[in-house]
Amino acid sequence: MKGLIGKKAGMTQIFNAEGNAVPVTVIDVTSVEVVGKRTMEKDQYTAVILGMTDAKEKHLTKAQVGSFKKAGANLKRTVREFRVEASELEGFKIGEHVKVDAFFKMGEKVDVTGITKGRGYQGVMKRWDFRGFGQTHGTHEYRRHPGAIGQRKTPGRVYPNKKLPGHYGVEQVTTQNLEVVGLHPEKNLILIKGGVAGSNDGLVVIKPSVKLALRTAHKAKK
Image (cartoon, one colour):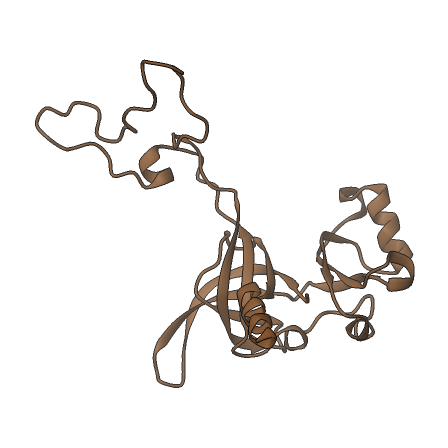
Protein backbone atom coordinates (compact mmCIF):
# COMPACT_ATOMS: atom_id res chain seq x y z
CA MET A 1 0.00 0.00 0.00
CA LYS A 2 1.47 3.32 -1.05
CA GLY A 3 1.45 6.14 1.50
CA LEU A 4 2.96 9.54 2.23
CA ILE A 5 4.02 11.56 5.27
CA GLY A 6 3.66 15.30 5.59
CA LYS A 7 3.29 18.26 7.91
CA LYS A 8 -0.11 19.73 8.72
CA ALA A 9 0.19 23.37 7.69
CA GLY A 10 -3.30 24.39 8.85
CA MET A 11 -6.80 24.83 7.45
CA THR A 12 -8.32 27.13 4.88
CA GLN A 13 -11.14 27.03 2.34
CA ILE A 14 -11.48 26.80 -1.42
CA PHE A 15 -14.43 27.21 -3.77
CA ASN A 16 -15.55 24.27 -5.90
CA ALA A 17 -17.05 24.35 -9.39
CA GLU A 18 -20.53 25.06 -7.96
CA GLY A 19 -19.23 28.08 -6.04
CA ASN A 20 -19.57 26.45 -2.61
CA ALA A 21 -16.92 27.02 0.07
CA VAL A 22 -15.12 23.78 0.98
CA PRO A 23 -13.07 23.57 4.21
CA VAL A 24 -9.70 21.94 3.54
CA THR A 25 -6.62 20.86 5.48
CA VAL A 26 -3.31 21.80 3.88
CA ILE A 27 -0.60 19.12 4.04
CA ASP A 28 2.98 20.23 3.28
CA VAL A 29 5.37 17.59 1.90
CA THR A 30 8.15 19.95 0.82
CA SER A 31 10.84 18.40 3.04
CA VAL A 32 9.91 14.76 2.32
CA GLU A 33 12.62 12.75 0.54
CA VAL A 34 13.28 9.12 -0.33
CA VAL A 35 15.91 7.92 2.16
CA GLY A 36 15.91 4.17 1.54
CA LYS A 37 14.38 1.09 -0.07
CA ARG A 38 13.47 -2.44 0.90
CA THR A 39 14.12 -5.01 -1.81
CA MET A 40 12.92 -8.56 -2.27
CA GLU A 41 16.47 -9.91 -2.57
CA LYS A 42 17.68 -8.44 0.71
CA ASP A 43 14.57 -7.91 2.86
CA GLN A 44 12.06 -10.41 1.40
CA TYR A 45 9.59 -7.59 0.70
CA THR A 46 9.51 -4.31 -1.21
CA ALA A 47 8.96 -0.91 0.40
CA VAL A 48 10.07 2.69 0.14
CA ILE A 49 11.41 4.63 3.15
CA LEU A 50 10.52 8.32 3.36
CA GLY A 51 12.15 10.92 5.60
CA MET A 52 10.90 14.35 6.61
CA THR A 53 12.47 17.43 8.27
CA ASP A 54 16.23 17.87 8.09
CA ALA A 55 18.11 16.84 11.24
CA LYS A 56 21.54 17.45 12.71
CA GLU A 57 23.84 14.55 13.40
CA LYS A 58 23.83 15.27 17.15
CA HIS A 59 20.05 14.76 17.25
CA LEU A 60 20.26 11.18 15.92
CA THR A 61 21.76 7.97 17.21
CA LYS A 62 24.93 6.59 15.66
CA ALA A 63 22.94 3.74 14.16
CA GLN A 64 20.54 6.16 12.49
CA VAL A 65 23.36 8.34 11.14
CA GLY A 66 25.14 5.26 9.79
CA SER A 67 21.98 4.07 8.07
CA PHE A 68 21.46 7.41 6.32
CA LYS A 69 25.10 7.65 5.24
CA LYS A 70 25.17 4.08 3.95
CA ALA A 71 22.12 4.77 1.80
CA GLY A 72 23.58 8.09 0.62
CA ALA A 73 20.60 10.07 1.91
CA ASN A 74 20.25 13.30 3.86
CA LEU A 75 19.72 13.11 7.63
CA LYS A 76 16.04 13.26 8.52
CA ARG A 77 14.31 13.57 11.87
CA THR A 78 11.17 11.60 10.95
CA VAL A 79 11.21 8.33 8.99
CA ARG A 80 8.33 6.15 7.83
CA GLU A 81 8.18 3.04 5.64
CA PHE A 82 5.47 2.19 3.11
CA ARG A 83 4.95 -1.05 1.21
CA VAL A 84 4.95 -0.78 -2.59
CA GLU A 85 4.96 -3.22 -5.49
CA ALA A 86 8.31 -4.29 -6.93
CA SER A 87 7.46 -2.58 -10.21
CA GLU A 88 6.76 0.71 -8.40
CA LEU A 89 9.99 0.57 -6.41
CA GLU A 90 12.09 1.30 -9.49
CA GLY A 91 10.45 4.72 -9.81
CA PHE A 92 11.92 5.95 -6.50
CA LYS A 93 15.47 7.25 -6.30
CA ILE A 94 17.23 7.84 -2.98
CA GLY A 95 17.70 11.53 -2.26
CA GLU A 96 14.96 12.83 -4.53
CA HIS A 97 12.05 14.93 -3.26
CA VAL A 98 8.65 13.29 -3.54
CA LYS A 99 5.97 14.76 -5.77
CA VAL A 100 2.40 14.80 -4.52
CA ASP A 101 0.93 14.00 -7.93
CA ALA A 102 3.02 10.81 -8.05
CA PHE A 103 1.25 9.44 -4.97
CA PHE A 104 -2.34 10.67 -5.16
CA LYS A 105 -4.77 12.14 -7.68
CA MET A 106 -7.70 14.52 -7.51
CA GLY A 107 -10.88 13.03 -6.04
CA GLU A 108 -9.10 10.06 -4.45
CA LYS A 109 -10.30 8.86 -1.06
CA VAL A 110 -7.63 8.69 1.65
CA ASP A 111 -7.19 7.92 5.35
CA VAL A 112 -5.19 10.49 7.35
CA THR A 113 -3.54 9.63 10.69
CA GLY A 114 -2.35 12.22 13.19
CA ILE A 115 -1.75 12.81 16.91
CA THR A 116 -4.50 14.80 18.61
CA LYS A 117 -3.77 17.97 20.57
CA GLY A 118 -2.89 17.50 24.23
CA ARG A 119 -5.49 19.00 26.57
CA GLY A 120 -4.03 17.99 29.90
CA TYR A 121 -6.08 16.67 32.82
CA GLN A 122 -9.80 17.07 32.10
CA GLY A 123 -13.08 16.18 33.77
CA VAL A 124 -15.70 13.76 32.54
CA MET A 125 -17.80 16.38 30.74
CA LYS A 126 -15.00 17.47 28.40
CA ARG A 127 -13.20 14.13 28.22
CA TRP A 128 -16.20 11.81 27.76
CA ASP A 129 -19.00 14.26 26.87
CA PHE A 130 -21.02 13.56 30.04
CA ARG A 131 -24.25 15.53 30.47
CA GLY A 132 -23.55 16.68 34.01
CA PHE A 133 -25.79 16.75 37.09
CA GLY A 134 -29.22 18.36 37.25
CA GLN A 135 -29.17 22.14 37.81
CA THR A 136 -31.83 22.32 40.54
CA HIS A 137 -31.99 24.66 43.54
CA GLY A 138 -30.71 21.88 45.77
CA THR A 139 -27.64 21.07 43.68
CA HIS A 140 -24.52 22.19 45.50
CA GLU A 141 -21.00 21.84 44.04
CA TYR A 142 -21.99 18.79 42.02
CA ARG A 143 -22.82 20.09 38.55
CA ARG A 144 -19.87 18.62 36.65
CA HIS A 145 -19.26 15.44 38.69
CA PRO A 146 -19.27 11.92 37.18
CA GLY A 147 -21.88 10.47 39.53
CA ALA A 148 -21.72 7.04 41.20
CA ILE A 149 -18.69 5.00 40.12
CA GLY A 150 -18.95 1.85 42.24
CA GLN A 151 -21.14 -0.08 44.70
CA ARG A 152 -21.19 -0.97 48.39
CA LYS A 153 -21.51 -4.74 47.91
CA THR A 154 -19.22 -7.31 46.28
CA PRO A 155 -16.79 -6.72 44.60
CA GLY A 156 -16.70 -3.33 46.34
CA ARG A 157 -14.37 -1.69 43.83
CA VAL A 158 -14.40 0.42 40.69
CA TYR A 159 -14.47 -1.65 37.51
CA PRO A 160 -11.62 -1.25 35.00
CA ASN A 161 -12.18 1.05 31.98
CA LYS A 162 -14.64 3.21 33.89
CA LYS A 163 -14.99 6.62 32.26
CA LEU A 164 -13.40 9.00 34.77
CA PRO A 165 -11.40 12.23 34.72
CA GLY A 166 -7.86 11.94 33.39
CA HIS A 167 -5.40 12.86 30.67
CA TYR A 168 -7.12 13.90 27.45
CA GLY A 169 -5.51 14.07 24.01
CA VAL A 170 -2.14 13.03 22.53
CA GLU A 171 -3.73 9.97 20.94
CA GLN A 172 -3.29 8.55 17.45
CA VAL A 173 -6.47 9.11 15.47
CA THR A 174 -7.21 8.11 11.88
CA THR A 175 -9.88 9.99 9.92
CA GLN A 176 -11.18 7.81 7.10
CA ASN A 177 -12.59 8.42 3.63
CA LEU A 178 -11.43 12.01 3.19
CA GLU A 179 -11.25 13.39 -0.33
CA VAL A 180 -8.23 14.91 -2.04
CA VAL A 181 -9.60 18.17 -3.49
CA GLY A 182 -6.36 19.89 -4.46
CA LEU A 183 -2.80 19.07 -5.58
CA HIS A 184 -0.09 21.69 -6.03
CA PRO A 185 3.09 19.96 -7.31
CA GLU A 186 4.95 23.26 -7.66
CA LYS A 187 4.59 23.90 -3.93
CA ASN A 188 4.26 20.22 -2.89
CA LEU A 189 0.97 20.82 -1.09
CA ILE A 190 -2.03 18.52 -0.75
CA LEU A 191 -5.51 19.88 0.03
CA ILE A 192 -7.77 17.40 1.81
CA LYS A 193 -11.45 18.09 2.40
CA GLY A 194 -12.33 18.37 6.10
CA GLY A 195 -10.24 18.35 9.25
CA VAL A 196 -7.64 15.87 10.43
CA ALA A 197 -6.26 15.13 13.88
CA GLY A 198 -3.27 17.07 15.11
CA SER A 199 -1.94 20.56 15.66
CA ASN A 200 -0.31 22.74 13.02
CA ASP A 201 3.21 21.55 12.08
CA GLY A 202 2.29 18.08 13.37
CA LEU A 203 3.15 14.86 11.53
CA VAL A 204 0.39 13.23 9.48
CA VAL A 205 0.39 9.99 7.49
CA ILE A 206 -1.74 9.75 4.35
CA LYS A 207 -2.77 6.38 2.92
CA PRO A 208 -5.34 5.21 0.35
CA SER A 209 -8.75 4.52 1.87
CA VAL A 210 -8.92 1.06 3.47
CA LYS A 211 -12.71 0.87 3.28
CA LEU A 212 -12.71 1.72 -0.41
CA ALA A 213 -10.09 -0.96 -1.10
CA LEU A 214 -12.13 -3.56 0.80
CA ARG A 215 -15.30 -2.54 -1.03
CA THR A 216 -13.54 -2.84 -4.38
CA ALA A 217 -12.10 -6.25 -3.48
CA HIS A 218 -15.55 -7.46 -2.34
CA LYS A 219 -17.14 -6.41 -5.64
CA ALA A 220 -14.36 -8.14 -7.59
CA LYS A 221 -15.17 -11.46 -5.86
CA LYS A 222 -18.80 -11.34 -6.89
